[in-house]
Amino acid sequence: MSSLPAQEVCRRCREETARYRRGEVHDDRYCFDTFRRAIVDRADICWEALLDIFAERVEAWCRIARKDPHCDVEELVAVTWQRFLHAFTPERLAKADGTKSVLKYLKLCAWSVVADAGRAETWELSLDREIGDADGTPITLGQRLADPGPLPYETVADADAAAELWRLINGCLKNEAERELMRLTLELGLKSREIQAQRPDLFRTTDDVYKMTRNVSDRLRRSPELRIWLDSNRG
Amino acid sequence: MTSSTSCVRPSAIRPGDLVAYARGEADTKAQRHVESCPFCRAEAEAIAALEGGLTRVLYRRSCPPTLTLAEYAIDALPPTERQRAAAHLVECPLCLAESRDAARYVEEVDREEQVTAFGLFAGVRRLFAQPWQREAGLAGVRGSESGESTTYTIEDTSLTIGVQRASRGRGFVISGLLQEELGASTGSPIVLYQAEQLVRSEVIDDLGSFSFENIAAGNYRLELVRPGGVVVIDGITAA
Image 1: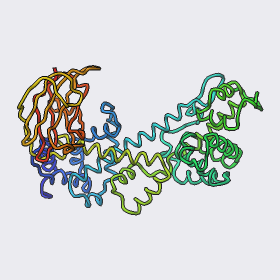
Image 2 (image 1 turned 90 degrees about the vertical axis):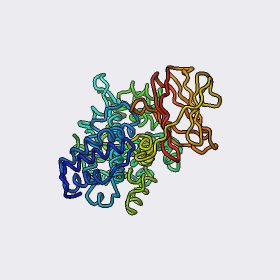
Image 3 (image 1 turned 45 degrees about the vertical axis):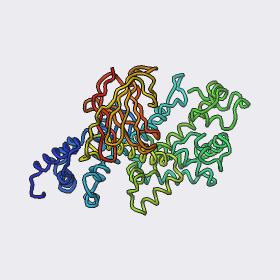
């Protein structure tokens, strides 16, 4: 197999995949070797062949993950391949027992890309909420934050920045209940009734969530260190 | 924003109302008050901006990457990572929901793979069912009240398929009943194709019946998995 030119392996991969689709007996080795050359040898010709041969499948997987058979998945498909390229290392390939297990990982990549898009949409939706007005014109949370950024957990504000922010927040908190409240609010973005439902042991009613949040919020707003941090990390 | 140094009517508002307003969760009474009180409105806006600013940095920060959740869902993580992910899932309802969604997705994709020629059917024997008997009406078939039915033989069992106009809505209903031991095919996929396009897939219920609703007029093919291979029922016309 390794003596065959890449073009020939790709051609056979395409042919064998077509056999597979028709329900005929097929030889899996050519597709597996096309993946091997793409992943281990970084052979562009093999990548291009795989993108083409499995295009329809990856599109279908993205649509299933999106739960929308008619949605536009062009970008999701592109990111799926990028993620696969990044995550499916030669070490992983060495453990794979055939094309089927490689494709299984590609399927997971498709789901994870769609799930990330879902996380981003949740954040973006929260930015549309009106939180006040300026001279009678309503302003949204997104407008109020100088530059809300697209994806909070993927922004330049890296793990160190988050750890430093948590240190400052923790300095204003009095007990475990307040820490849990802040985790559920700031890290998970839960609504008050969801927080109460998640921790009925700490919050008997949604009103308890509101009251504790108000107290914590007042303390956080009075913290000069936190104000400095927020001002210097805005936008 | 017009600002003020104190609330215009403190008795109209409870301690938590400003947080509720800032989160878009306030009741009408609190909402009316905040919107008419410059002080409370400014306070609510400050609370929302603070929460928003902090959430911007911390949102899903400690959550595992979605690919890790997907690997967790199919039990593909090494033990240490699996344990770490499991510990996170216990306290994160969002990741728990995502992980369950990943498991459902894998199940669904696998089912789709089973029912498209691309997937697990590769190399499987295809059995072409033969029409055996046609009759009006279709007793015992889910959703069937009128129309014509055809019974097909498939080796040692038979399958009766009926096509009817939908009583409500548009289009047709294609339904069927497998004559076999009760429950023998429960959960097996059955797929409706038009030319080479997969139209829809369903599963056979515990009575051996299935139904495709809101089907447009046209010619269709059904495929279902049997122990001996894939059974193909061609030439089903909805007209």
